Structures are given as C-alpha cells and as structure tokens.
Amino acid sequence: MGTEYRTKKEFEPGNGYTKDDWDIVDSPELTDDELARMKPAKDVLPSSFFRGLAGARRGRGRPKVEKPLVPVTLRVEPDVLEAFKASGEDWRVRMNEALRKAAGL
Image (cartoon, rainbow, N blue to C red; front, top):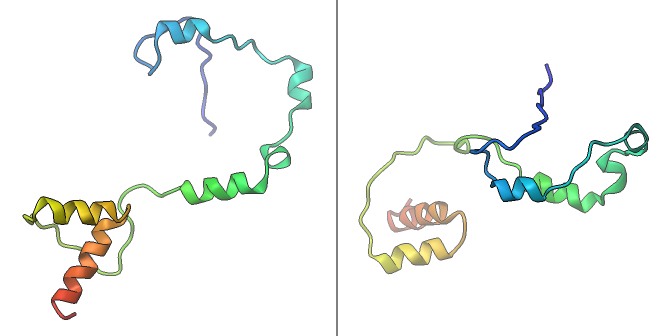
C-alpha cells in the first residue's frame, strides 16, 4: 500500500506554484544508470542531519498531558501577553506554571 505518484506532464494551477515556476524547472527523468548509482540518504548525509529532523518531527494534534486542560477565555494586558509569548514556543506552559505558583499550588 504505497503512495502512488503521478508525473505531471503539463502545468496545473492550484498546486502552490506558478506557471513561471513550472516553466523554469528542468528536471529530466533519471536514467537507469543514475538510478543504479543512487545510495540511501543515511549513507551520504551526516548523522547530524537526521538528528535535526528527529527533533523537528511532531505528532499530529495536541500533545498528551497528564491532566486534561480546561479551555478558558482570559483577558490580560497586552504587555503581559507579549512577555509570555516572547519567552518562547511553550509560553502557554510557562503561563500555566505562573498561575499555579500564584494560586499556591
């Protein structure tokens, strides 16, 4: 059950690129000799490349949490929100920790 690929012979709009992009690309089909000389990526790329990819991979949906979270609407001053957002990608986690600390939990 592999993914089937269809080679496009003509430009089709709506695929994320323009007709000019399509026209400028020159990608002839690989010859049998070129295909025979190909090696797996793990044999030609440094291991650091794959470590970088592994760190970038994420599952779909929200991350699993120990306790279910309750969505709320909270009005805060803009500078407070910007300070949390500026602290990095996990700003919501840090905001939750600050609220827990303020609540004495």
